[in-house]
Image (cartoon, one colour):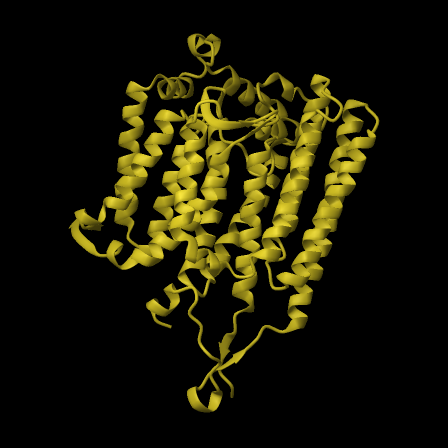
Length: 473
């Protein structure tokens, strides 16, 4: 198949007979698809059982009785997870069988830890963080079902490439509108909708991935054109640098006006990875990294917010940084919590995760590390690794360039977000304020990440159900 045929999402070819052209199209057997769904059902039930056991261990550790609200919400969530599985049986029988159980398990472990922190601070009732998280997870699962039902072919998104880009820009600008945007923890990334708050940038990353995939498919030839060589690397022509400069300015705008270092890094790195996947030119990556490092150094010199983040990172254990308002207290307490967990952890309900500020959102990985230990954290990292690996596998197996780029971009967005969060907590990089996907408290983050899973499931089904060519003997 030629590049032009692969790049057009609507391009199809009629089945070829063995007598005329050699290969013949053989569809995926129905029995194999049923086995995938049977395996998924077993894994989903195992994930629900582990989540229930986690809640029980929290209650045994803290010494409280199971509340009726937690029981009802837990049963509803288990029913919705099985509902997603049933939906896949009918509308996406060839979808990847591991993504749903892994995300369900991550979400359940996060709810268990949030519930444990609620008990530590005495937060109960419908207004507790755990109950809100369970409600948002129910909404996210319902949204996942809707995407699977109404989006039957991912190539439809290719038609709306520039509309997705415009929508992402609008979502990024919403928090800057007076009266609508609201600042929390120094970042202007939220909008207020009555008693609720929402982070539109979480949905913007999905629209940006759709836009990047469509744009790069359309313009890959011009972007892949080689200019001069330097130190053994082939760099693009100067007149082809327009797109990377535009998105560098966008990332710097998020950093300057919304004071959000993590989101700025996520958007720009997403574009760099997708342009590398589209062109195969490492010169784009080196140019992008040079631009971002230069922008970060300038921001660290002239923006007090960024300068404080770097000071807290480099001098975390100094008295001046530790005792300062907005200093390194949170970072240091999180490190002490991880050290207190040791290899196997203190056990659920036996640690002190509530000592660290924001233990249910920004620092939930440190909370889990204290009570589950290094072994538990490695299991969580392994779940993330499986999720990202399955997503990248979908991209590598893609039959069209748009689907391959979209799957790769969405998978990398999850991987990069995990790295930014864990790297900040473990003092590998400065703290950024991003939250761990599926684990941390936050409705907008949970919703956007479940939408990513829905898109990856749809992509995996489309790829698996495309005819494959075999040679008849």
